[in-house]
Amino acid sequence: MAARTVEGLNGDAMNTERAGKDDRLLDELLRAWKVDEALPPSFQEQVWRRISLEESKQAPGVSAWLAGVAAAITSILRQPLGATAYLSILLLAGVAAGYWTSEQEVRQTEATWRTAYVRTVVPTTSLSPAP
Image (cartoon, rainbow, N blue to C red; front, side):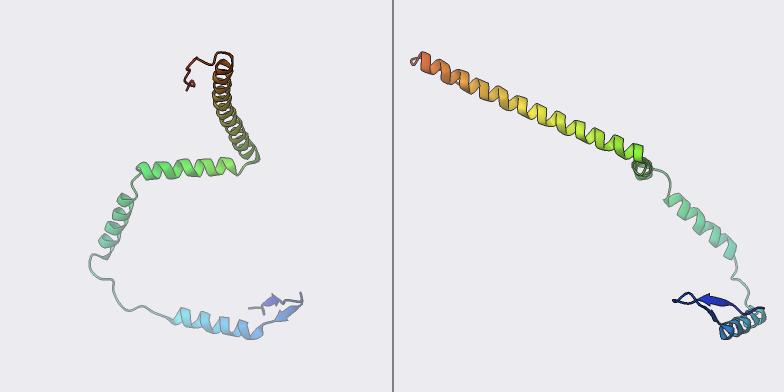
C-alpha cells in the first residue's frame, strides 16, 4: 500500500506514513474479527414486521399530498421563470387590491361631497350620506 498524502492548509503535500500504518493495523484487526453469536430466533420476521409497520405509518394521505404540492411549488419557484411568474402574480394581486380599495374610497368621498353640495344649495334638505 502506497503512503497517502494529504493537502495541507498551505497547499503542500504532507506525508502521512503513520496514518498509513494505522490504516493497515485497522484493516488487519477488522479482517481478524469474527462474530460467534447467532441471531435470535425469528429475527428476520421481526425485521420485516418493523419495516411493514413503518411503511403503513407513511401511507399517503392528506399530509403526504400537501407535502408533494409544497415540494412541487418549491421546485417551480427555484427556477427563474417560476420565480418571475410568482412575483408577477403577486404584483398584479397588489395592484388589483389597491385599485379596489381606492375605488371604494372614491365612491365614499364622492357621496360625501354630493351630500355636502346638496346641503349647501338646499339647506332644508335632510340627506343621509350614501353607504
